Length: 150
Image 1 (tube, helix red, strand yellow):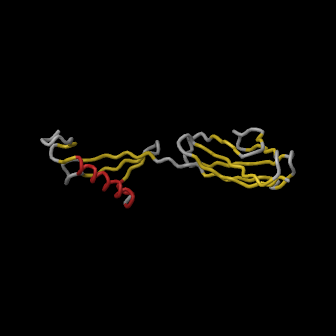
Image 2 (cartoon, one colour; image 1 turned 180 degrees about the horizontal axis):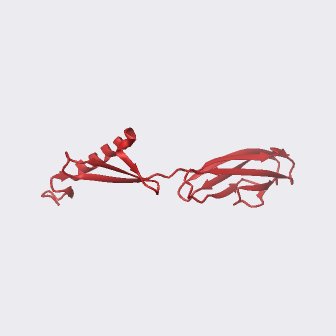
Image 3 (spheres, one colour; image 1 turned 90 degrees about the horizontal axis):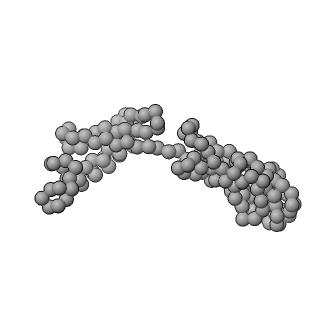
């Protein structure tokens, strides 16, 4: 603590200067990727000087890519009581991520709502939006497709 009761991270550099330096380093990473080094676990490290070379700041950033999701259905129109084949495809560039699926609709029923590909049964007439959420455990991608039941 300094004499006015405020915490400092360096004897001569108040915490506000560190916060500004950290922001500057993050901005430098965004503008000049040569300031960063990657790691096997997908993290990045930025090295830089906080006050003219007397101290340094290290920032580790973990970047998670959310799954991209596409859907298809066949047929797009059917009668009440009939089934529609629905397919959800999740793609995540983080190869170690395990993807989970969840299909939802306001009405009707899915044979297996947690499967990427399943069947949907129309239970009432109208246009229904079938939605699939694909999660990698940290974020999710969503896609929807309308179908008609008559």
